[in-house]
Amino acid sequence: MKHLLRLLALSLAMILLTSAAFAYPPGFLVYNGDRGEKRIAITVDDCYDADVLRMMHEMCVEYDFPITWFVLGTQIRDEDKELWEAIIAHGSEIGNHTWKHPYLTRIKIHNARNQILLTQERIDELLGYHYPLRLLRPPFGYYKEGNVNLLDMFYEYGIERTVMWDVSYTDPQQAFDATENGSILLFHTNYEDLECLKVLIPMLLEEGYELVTVSDLLGMDPPEIGGEKYVFPYR
Ligand SMILES: [Zn+2]
Image (cartoon, rainbow, N blue to C red; front, side, top):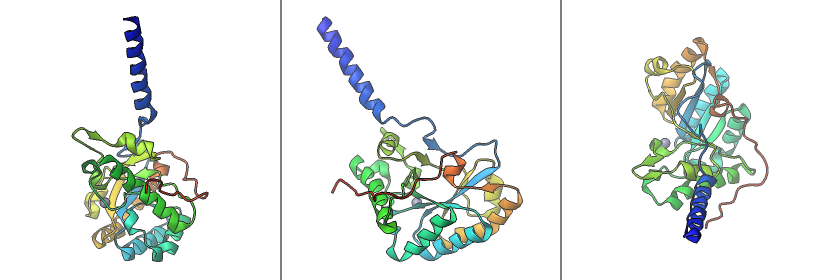
């Protein structure tokens, strides 16, 4: 009996240990930043259209604010290398939006993992150095469905924040009205959103909002870039 109890205690400890090893920390899933400060973050997903990507970046330069780009690995094109370098030099930030935009909750977990890691490898390959993609925006905002919850897995594979949003409108007035302190605004690289941002950005600046990266909004240090390129180990 004593032996059995000890075995039980040991098994329980093992379960706790293994589950605690990669349990995501508090604040890992975010919809917004501090509601007490007049700071917000503009995020743009997908990066399907390189022309729109360029024009949105030019807006960043014109109005002197950063965008946090959630890029798909498949949309990181060699011919855009200089553009991505300019984006980083400007102070914008790059986050992970997976390799090719699946519902992560509906594929096998190792495939979901690969969706994240392959994108990390691709950005490093393009830039020629390590740029840690610390922020993840799951496609369609799906990280949890039924019994599946991927937050621990994201954390296990180097993601530091899973970034959702609290404002998503393509009409500038609606977006403006929905924005409050700490908001994270969601846009995509398409012409409709470009036109929206052209009107919205001056409105937000006029209102006194400081536009910052998601990392900055969440009080994280800027990403430490440089160092050895990440190589995907599961081929
Ligand atoms: Zn997307």
